Length: 350
Image 1 (cartoon, rainbow, N blue to C red):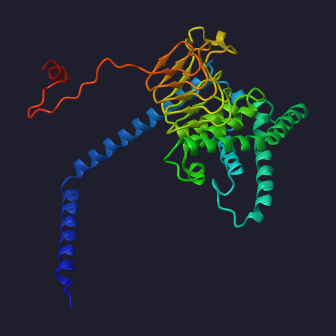
Image 2: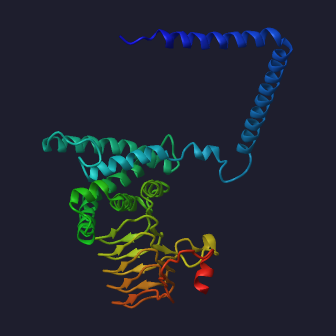
């Protein structure tokens, strides 16, 4: 038998000592206790005053003139949370059984798809009406939203066929890819490209929603593709983090990018005066661009079947079938010493 009495006795002893000390402090220091409660009351009163003043000041800023204070307009803006939920449903629509609960059987696919489309229609119609600035919507706004949605759903089968070319490109272009299922389930680039292709259908027809869609994908994948970009079939982004594709970028078919590639404007000093103008480069068919490369300017064209090496900074066009690479001055490899130099400069001066 294990004896537990000594431990129980020890615990009772400690509790008794703690009670005794607390009782002694309360009995022998009434002034200290009173001072403690007085100070505490003052501190809580000061905190309440500070919080009340901060809230009042914050409320005051809502009434000031400025781009973030249009409360009446904000009330009719599309819901970001609702659009993000729609993006999740759209991914399930493109890849049923991969992005949501697995289907019990293929016989359920037709009913599940019809239900999913009805839910998406109801959700997106409300948000499109909001994006058009009419909540509650009038008859013309509802008709416009319905027209946009019918065209959107009509083009989804074509988008899905295009996405299969992107999956083909990923499988053929990445020796680490073992199956198509792995690409659909695990490759962030496919999610970014899929959301871009669906957002592109809405771009120019309704405000805000396409950009919210691609920014949702951007926040999840680290890949920033503007919904206004034009991208051909068999598009593959390997790894993907840090890729930026600007609004007026034009990309042909069978193009492969690596992480950190950016297609950007040469200068934004003119600001809104550049709206609607070609600011980003054109990438022709069959181009491969390696990690960390930046290509700048609306008049820059990368010719077909060219390869651009890593960490290149391009501001001029490249003819077809070119190889472009950055030639480093020197990379030194030296044996380590027992007592290493204090700085890199010291090392290279030896």
